[in-house]
Length: 393
Figure (cartoon, rainbow, N blue to C red):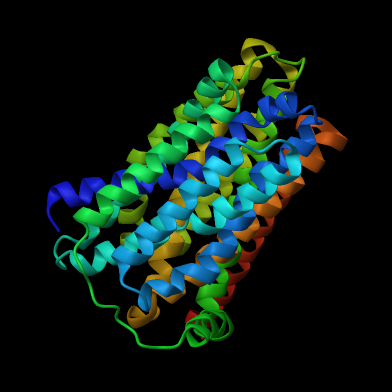
């Protein structure tokens, strides 16, 4: 695990994660290009999120059974073909179907993380995983700017074509660069899937982490699906590049997540989750001012999305610290269960965000954030109270 390989894997994570998020920035362009309502075009982003959650559950456990080089490069190749299919889609239904395929096979980052952890020495493992996470965050943030700007310039199909080229090039490079490894498990595929479900049943701390992340990530996707509709509405009258430019402010998250990890080690995951859920609710108050438009509204959107991004990513670090302490020998399957629940929450949040915007406008989206993150906060406070009572006894 030399530095060049770490950087290559981090770049791969960024490109892969970007494929999940750039459709959020181009949904208004898709609506115009295909002649469909904007809320219908937003189903493209929802389909990607839903497909990603399914892929995490069905494909990530194979990382314990199939050699990583074969599995990662094969999934990258299929994802590239899916992106080309999406670029050629003549209507919305084929585009939604292709988006679901892209999401399902685009589970590269959750596969690379345990693979890299196995290659790195114990003294370097944290640094390697931190670098991979930075790549994923960078891909998430920059992909919206990339998708919005390129789509506005060359049309909504262009981001899909460029992403397909990048994915296929990376697949070829990784086929040559990745070392050959032996799979750590000989379990049959149904047993691998079954163990992820069993862990959800037997590990209450895993269920807690899944619930917190599903609620906060649902808030996150609701905002980013709705903000594209808000910025391109008559309230602001901006184009798709504005959505991407707004996303770039979340680059501060790349600095904040290592701090959150150190605080989780020092004070425990619950303390970090508490700050993050309160931060998510606070972001809703800031974002609500955005419904007034103008310079003040735009500044509030910038501040609100920044707080939301930092809270969501920092909470994810805390949740992973909690689950990785449970069963060291089953971390991939713990991560499968956790990420599946998180992205199911994200796809639900995206779907609910579109409906909230259609019926209640931007204030409805902000109210949805309060409802979801407030549920996480209530669950966390109840758990902390029970733990405090148990410690007192």
